Structure formats: C-alpha cells, structure tokens
Image 1: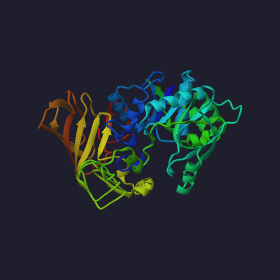
Image 2: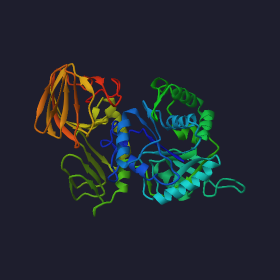
Image 3: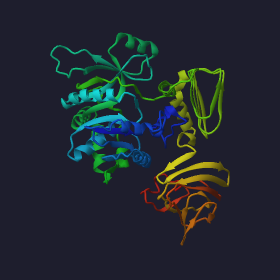
Image 4: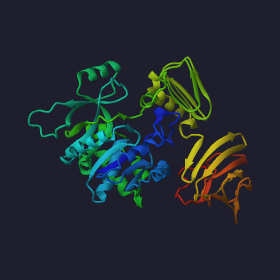
Length: 480
C-alpha cells in the first residue's frame, strides 16, 4: 500500500494564518508538528510504503524541510505547476506508478486532516485493503453523528442477500452535496449516512480504468502531461503547457459518483478535516469559559470563542462565539456561525490584488526565511535567517542597493570579485548592479538585517545567475 499524500490545497478557510505560499497543511495548528507531518507520522508502520507526495512546485522546499525534520523520505514527489483538483493529481500519481511497472494499492489522503485514533485508522485500512484487492473503489466514510453543513454526505446501501461485498463495507447508494441544517439533521436521525472524508483506497489501474471510462479528457491530458514531464531523482515536474489544458475536477465528481464499484468503509477514528476555524475550535482543549486561546491573549466575560494572537497582545471583552485571528499584517474577526464564508472574503481580497492572501510577512525559502520589518517609498528593511550550510542565489539588482548587518552567526559574502566573512555586529554595503551572494558557512543559523534603498524595491528586481536549488527566473522571483 502506497500513501499518496495530496498537499496542493491553499487552505483559504483558515486565512489569515493559512496563505497560498504557506497553506494550512504546513502549519502546526494542533500540536508541535504540522498537519502534513502528522499525516506522514501516523502512516509509519509495517505494511505501509514510503509516501508519494503530490504538491505545488512552489511548496517543494517546504515539503523537503518538513520531511527532514521528522526523518521521513518519499519514494517520489509529483510537482504540480498549478492546481487542477484531486482527479488529475491522483491520475498523475497513478500513471507515474504504472510507468514504473507498479500497479499497487494507492491510499489517497489529504495532507491536512486530524485523526486521533491511529488504531481505529489501521483497522479501517485492513478492511479497506481486502475490498480494494477485490477491485472496489473504497471511500472512507465518517459516521454522521451531528448535522454538519460543511461536509458532503454519502448514503450507504444495505447489502442484499448474495452481495459479495466484503463484510463491514457498504455499497454507495448516493452522494449528497453539502446540505442545509434541516436536511443534515434528517440524515443523522435516519442513520446510514456518512461524511465524505476525501480519503480513498484503490488500485492504480482500477482508478485509471474508471477515469478513462468516465472522464477521458482528464485521462488523455494526464497521459500526455506525464510524457512531456521531466523526472529527475524521483521528482516529477509536470509539464505546465499540457497540464494547463486538463479539466479541473475532483475524484468524487470524476469517478466515485459514476463508478458502480464505489463502496464505503466506516472510519470512526477521531477524524476532523480542520476545514474551518470552528472545526479547529472543536479539536482544542477549552478553558473554563469554553475559549481556545493561543498566543498573548486576555479575555473578560467572553465565552466559546477562538482567539489566536501571533505578534501582539489581543484582548476580548463581552464577546461570545467569535473567532479572532491576529497576524503581523492582518486581523480577521468572525462569528463562529459565519466562518465558512472566510473563503468568500479571501476571494474578495484576491480580486483586489491584496498580497495578504499570498504570503505572510515571514516568507519561507529553501535556504531559510525573511521577515518584512519596515517599508517606505525608497527603503525596505528585512530580517533574514539563513540555515547552516545554506546559501542564497548568486544575483544582482538593477534598481536597489543593500546594506547587510550581521545580528548573529557568521556570513560569507560574495560581492563582485570579493569573498569575505562577517561576524556579529559587522556590516557591508552591496552597490546597485553588483553581483552578490549571502551564505552561512557556520553551524548555527545566520541572522542579518537587510536595509534596501533605491528607486524601485519590487521583488521582481532580481536576476539570478546561479542557484543551487534549481530555481529559474520564472519561479518565485524574490529575495534569495
């Protein structure tokens, strides 16, 4: 069984903590490790192979860093130039496996779910394995024990006498879109309904046969995209020109709602998709007033609220059932009953060209990170952290000069034909158009303050001449 981890989502419902360049699966929302790391750790047991990760090309280095921190390696990584939903993502993974002569069971999992009962998960996997070995398309269903309106539902059919389906698995009778509260309540009362978890198990060839039958355009485009993609050391870079033509569709709509082989295996294992701020409130311990408080937060006469402070003191007085999330560059306040509309708000911000939906003040790069400290018309100040042994690209700027001041660690500086070291409290000046590079030859993180000055300070004023991380001018033209 091969875990296929889908890590291409943007997690916009958890804005402003989740941003497109650093979405929720990479955030430590429910513990010390990120949701992505937790997903991989719970699959580290006998009978489970190394994972295959499908992610956006922009997130490749975040994925590598988080894998390194938990000591897990992948058997391959499929990099999407942009998202085309789950059906094409899984198709690319399945086609890659078959191209290697491996028609194996694919356990398809989103990278951003919470599962508390790992033993319950393993029991469900064993039952699902039997069904998938017999050609079934298994969907893991969460018993619907409350009238949730944010999930799709599955109605499971009772087995008729003589049905050869694996005992404990149920034939899918109907898929139901997200219902209103009244209809969801009826589902819970009547029984036999499950929440659609978005988790699947099937053989690679079975999925591709069903996809080719029901959505031939997706299948044909993905076959052509793989033929034109570049694969180096287990990393598949999907050809963007071909993939752009692929229809955008989910596994549910493309295959599961159309196949006659869809079945449900119940999964009662403390599952939560952490798909909204209210669901994140659900999975945390509350104080005596029912509040979940993160960061420097003080409340008075407030109840059943979620308050997350990141960079400053946040106070709440006389407020019940609200969500307050503060980051360095944005504050979001919503009633808990309205948190499903956060995505609509993000769409509005996107239409306005707001950068707050794209990245945090802290921006992560393969060599480390940088944090914007101050901005002006002709100056910009950044706090840059470079990991031990890492280095920024060899580059130049046409419109700005830079001053570097070392706060801690040791910096190796390249400036035109000079290479020299700087230590704590030392500084240097990088003139406009000088070819330069910053490296950390030490054993501890290097921290510097960078002061930029010039007529144009846009992040696209960078010309990369060399880059050990293989980035091109078309990929994330920005610091480093």
